[in-house]
Image (tube, rainbow over all chains, first blue to last red; front, top):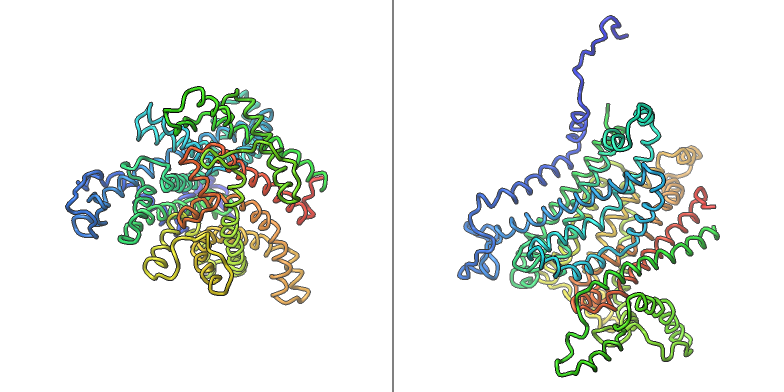
Amino acid sequence: MTDLSNPIPTKPPRSQWLDIWDQFKTHKGALWGGIIFLTIVVLVFLGPFFWNIDATFIDIRSRNQGPSLTHPFGTDQLGRDTFARMMAGGRTSVSVGITAMLLALFLGSFIGILAGFFRKLDGILMRLTDLFLALPLLPLLLVMMLLFREPLSASFGPERGIFILIVGAIGITSWMPTARIVRGDVLALKEREFVLAARSIGTTNTKLITRHILPNVLSPIMVSATLGIATAIITESALSFLGLGFPPDFPTWGRLLFDATDYLQQYPERVFWPGMAISLTVLSVNYLGDGLRDALDPRIRGR
Amino acid sequence: MLTFTIRRLVLAVPTLLFISLILFLLLELAPGDPMAQVPLTVPPDVKQKMREALGLGEPMPIRYWKWIVQFFWIEPQVLVDWVFGTHFSDGDLRVISWQTRSPVMDLVVQRIPQTLWVVGTAYVVGILIAMPIGIYSAYKQYSIFDQAGTFVSMVGFSVPPFFSGVLVIVIFAVQLGWFPSIYDTTHVVDSWDSFVVQLKQMIMPVMVLALQITAQISRYMRASMLDNLNQDYVRTARAKGLTEYTVVMVHVLRNSMIPVVTVIALAVPAVFGGAIITEQVFKVNGIGQMLIVAIQANDLPTVQTLTFIFAVLIVLFNLIADVLYGLLDPRIRYD
């Protein structure tokens, strides 16, 4: 039996996040996914500081070159350096992915918490979610790109206008799964004793949500965050690939892939780089989400 | 069960009406003008008449009502006429495409067989590959086969069709020259040789679509099998002395199929949506390609109709999935 005279625990207390990290480390795929995703993000955002060729610099004499020391990924039909264009494209694709995910996450958590917490709002908000789930998303996104491209590029400039449009369109068409998961968790949490205790000492609804509910639904939100980045990057690339994304002189991974398909017969390797970048990013993010789901679930985590 | 089905059917009507309203209001904002191509030599009053002939002169609610009537009342009549040779719809105005000035539904009917062939074959192939993978992965959990299967399904999730499609074109059409890179929809199958040609041109789009379907369904199949493999009734079946094959393939599989069947039904509209990109890659002139062309040409009636058809598909298959779930699982009867 334990020594009753000494009630001080021998082991120092461990924080919850340390436990989660320990569990996360055991999932090799997730660990590698995280490392690869971080590497891609760092390379794409810090790379231009070390790589001096501009993505839009045209050197017509060295066009259509294969991989070499000066141009590791070769050059395109106008002599622009593919490596620099890949980094510029990645910056846009990753920024679109992360921003759209944040928007969808905010909308989803907001609606999910409102629906779960206030019974009066539950019916109408969940019907709204069902309606959004019944919308044909890809056709609708294409229609939205068609309709709002002109006015938004007129008021914010071509690049920023399209950025706002794509992020907004992806955000408001992908919040529904998050809202459903969050609502389910909030419904279960609301009946727990600590919520009753907090309410009995006179906590207001706002404080109750921000202090007690929100931290407890953080784990499903984080998992949908990683999966949200993956879907947002794929959707943006799909729109660019269909020719309805960013303007032609503004590279993104989807746009580079789309441009490369014109030269499929002569230079098939040009398709490879952007396609590989999209697939690798999405694969690593998916693995990251998988590991995060296991690590954040206290039933799986060995305590 | 019957009352549940009827209730769901009735509920689907306001959903569809609401979606049609959203689509209509969205397209109301469109900047394009269908009269933009008309030459400047045409006098303004003639132009005004042409505008009215296209149904553009009236206020918004009336045009919405007319569109609803055309879509839900006149088009079904046309279908009935076409099937039974009656004359209900003679003289009625139909939804006209601004590109070709012919009824949109006629164009859709021309395009649908190509889409159905490619998507349908891919769906069947995908399910046929996914089921054994899911069953065996769950039976040998954490084995090398299971790890490999999980990795392949992760890859299938992550590689978008516009990359896998282009990749198979590079490998099998450009480098090896085995299959044509473009799907020829005018090809008629009337002999063994033409059948082989048809098979060759279908392999690549079907494989690209099937990879995604396999990735999704095999994961559900595996999870569902794992849920059932540790149940008490499985131990009972083994204790009775049934062979391992009967236990897994009859007892466990039949129970595991319940959620998988609903997932298969629910994923049908998503596959149609995903086929938009695959059709674009392989130049299949199905309804996805029709939508893209209509969007680029600012052909609003066609865009409206096609988007709404996609919405109808989603609502319909949601309904089918719900009803199937109740039919297959007696524990869930919505009475």
